[in-house]
Amino acid sequence: MPPFVETLNRNITDILIDKLISKTASLGVIGLGYVGLPLAVEKAKAGYRVIGFDIQQKRVDMVNQGINYIGDVIENELRQLVQTGAITATTDYSFIHELDVISICVPTPLDAYQQPDITYVKASAEAVAAHLHPGMLVVLESTTYPGTTEEVVLPILEATGLKCGEDFFLAYSPERVDPGNRVYNTKNTPKVVGGITKACTEVAATLYEQVLEGKVHQVSSPAVAEMEKILENTFRNINIALVNEMAILCNRMGIDIWEVIDAASTKPYGFMPFYPGPGLGGHCIPVDPWYLTWKAREFNYHTRLIEVAGEINNSMPEFVVERIGSILNQFCKPINGSTVYLLGIAYKKDIDDYRESPVIKIIELLKQKGARVVFSDPKIPRITYKGTNYEGIELTAENLSNADIVVLTTDHSDYDYNLIGTNAEVLFDTRNAMQGIEHKNHYFRL
Image (cartoon, rainbow, N blue to C red; front, side, top):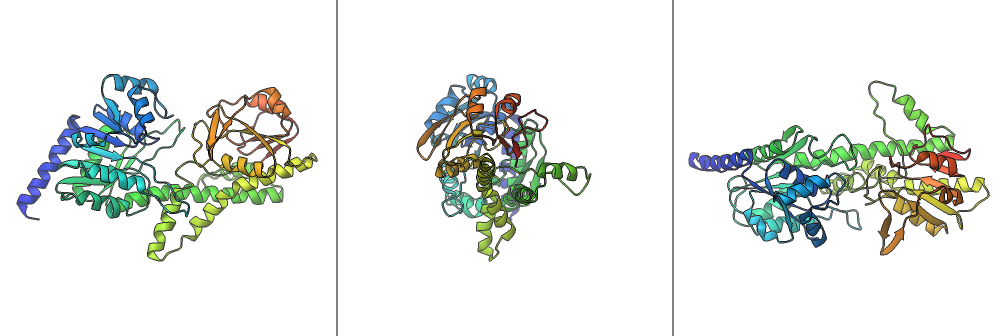
């Protein structure tokens, strides 16, 4: 690179870094969901002016009114930031031209064939490209397969005629949101950053160092950062599958899996406890590993372990329904016509999110077998599934005692477990939530 070009590039880099450090840079976030809104709030709290973009007018209106809809955001903080003008939201992507930094935090679901659907990423990149200008940083945060930043986003942005690393900066930094986690959140979780060039990485790292408390770990490329995120979730997916398979086997052998895990956990090295459950939910663990299995085919590799783990975890709702049928059979009752009372719709405790929740599959399977299914969830009073609305019922002694079987599917902290244990005639606990709680004689664990 000629010295004058290198100097010019350095000047562009230094100008943006100076603006980030002085908090005079204007930042944007595309996608105001579980990842985007908490990130936008943290950026505004750090002293930046932030514009949030979303295609859903309802979300935009709620943000502009200071109304929170994400569990990891404190509504009073959001309201104050909106009132001071630190955060605004819009559906008009032309405001991107005012920004120095734009982060893309949009969904990356799987299609009907378990293949990555990056429609939202492409659309966001095209929206940014329409308003891309020299000196701008673009960061993709959506979880995706290795290569997305370089193979999909970069060509869209460079089609403008601007050159990455010279005219603008592009990096990947995976989101690490864990809804309901009371210890780690967007603010204090370490961040991984990988840019197209060293300058891209440097600028992106500077951004997060100003916003977050967690350490910023720089890697050599976006692909490393993308793969790192997949490894995190695949690690959990495989270990959960292992313990789920152990739970199925222990049930057949008459061994208490929970006692087995407690015993194994006494080893101070070489073991990390994972726990069985009715299945996996949310957008990350049950979805992300499939990005890698899809990408691996391009390199003529079959990710056998990952796919088997997915099959085991996806089969857990069927196992739960089989157990429900087996338990009811002990009391001379068929599933057909029995009232099955499910406690919990959310895919994990203490959140209001039922995306990909295994409980939805359990409901579907039970209904196919003729069961009357009712549910209570303190976080989710009603759900919509396949166009049909379902209303939850109040958790009362009468509703518990009237059920043929009560199935604890989500272990929310604010359940009255004493009420449940006292009034459920037959209780099937898929989360080991009733440990230490008095209950009637007819108590079963996964």
